[in-house]
Length: 68
View 1 (cartoon, helix red, strand yellow):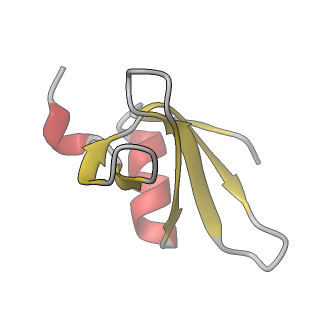
View 2 (view 1 turned 90 degrees about the horizontal axis):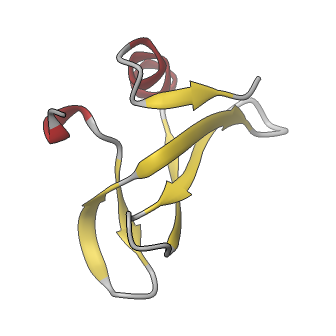
View 3 (view 1 turned 135 degrees about the horizontal axis):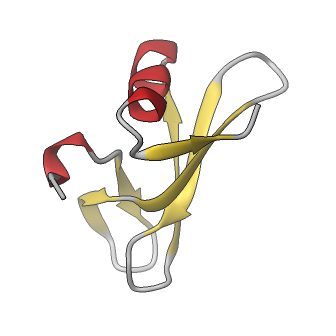
């Protein structure tokens, strides 16, 4: 799979930047923003705040599942 389309985030446990997020699920926050939650492939949980365009593009590319 092409990793350039993955949502990237900061992993708090390993302190790595731009780690591709696996099993991502995009949901809406209470204030109308978008958040992606997933893991780094090793079981470490990650989350990232996204803009509307990037969130909808990730869902369209089937990189993330929709939860709203």
